[in-house]
Image (cartoon, rainbow over all chains, first blue to last red; front, top):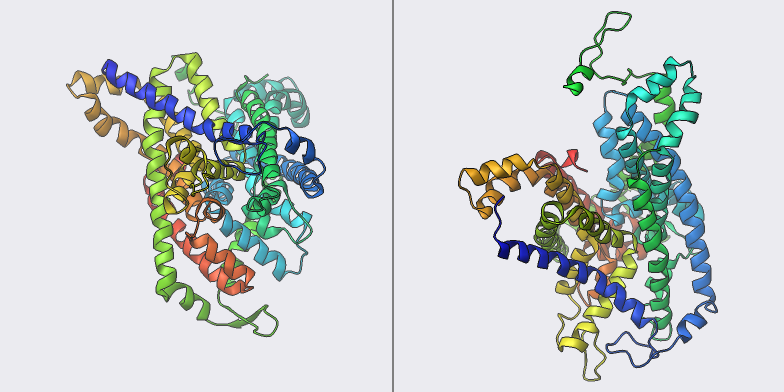
Length: 263
Length: 301
């Protein structure tokens, strides 16, 4: 396609502007977490680390951090297990209704979170299940399955089927083939999917709000409950920065793992 | 040539032709793999959605505030006939469309630059850099946009924009649209980028050889071929924007969207009415998915 040098320059400019706009607000939160004033106004008044130092003394925030981590971990395990099983089923077999099932897996993230959240809450309440840690785990696992599934199925598609056939021809049982051939090839994709599921769960707020009872408060919920309280606001910027500093590197790691060559 | 040989039909012991190589017919193992995830998705998820639709017809026990199984169409008629709610739905759809268009307008040139013009190394780095924020937390980003867009008062307590250029759109529908576009941008970028990478160069060259300028090639060759990718991306940007209520709380000021009335009804507590309101985004999304499905979106999800 013929593009004038001016056209190329314009496209380049748009791309780097978009990149800048994407990271500017994130950088801003980082800077504001060191603001000595209790405000998110620009420009910051002065430099201070007191919000960072005081953060761990804010008991509610600390507890929220723990419950977010625990929650994301359990949701991740369920997502890895169910997502991988689904990926194997959809990649290795031809059967009626396959398209519907892959559509079904995407639905929890394609429908607005509030629909998923209200629907699950409604079901839990109707059947008399207590809203609490387990109901939030169930909600999170529902929309995390697709992330694990996507990563595993993408890897399975890249593995040549003749490796499995060779293994079988050489006398390996299906279990041995899985253990010695398939698993080493998909390991990194499973891990990548798991990490992304963890990150997705760690910062989800809508489904959490509707499926959590009074006893559970996650980090995002804590931010939501406190961003309009002037006295807690500086800790909100610290928390937000913390979430960023945790999730950016692990998401980057997951990208690397997901892209790495099988083996 | 090698590929051709590999795809040559093979004859197995029973003399049958196996077109789908390495893809056995449904077996015991398939059900072993499918049962658990399907049970989860169908019973827990689809079951809940179905129950939600049903519970929109339940009436509320005035005394206990709990839904009873007595059927009524009161909730549905309240949610679907009152002008106040209808205008709220129209505004929500308008915001979702605006955010989707904004995402597309920015994602298209960006994806094109990355997929077609950037060097191999930069390409990889740019994709990762633009996808990563997807995982940094919805609330973190919405809150960050609050710090950017906060309007200033006479005390000079405005956010980044107002402090730097002396103007900001303030809190309201514009801020909500901008924030939603910011949040869901990667969902639009990724499928368009993937679609552009798959696009054969020869088609663009042929178009140029036949005398089409770059805009014409874009309009008549690229856009139709990218339509499924764009449709796939728009499902996320549209749907996630449509149902949003937290961004509205953070940067919306007095603005309201469907999500806010669902939440309000739920906290009232009027569960059946909340369920009736939820039918709005569900119906809109079913219609949207049907239209986008025709555009080929599901091959790209």
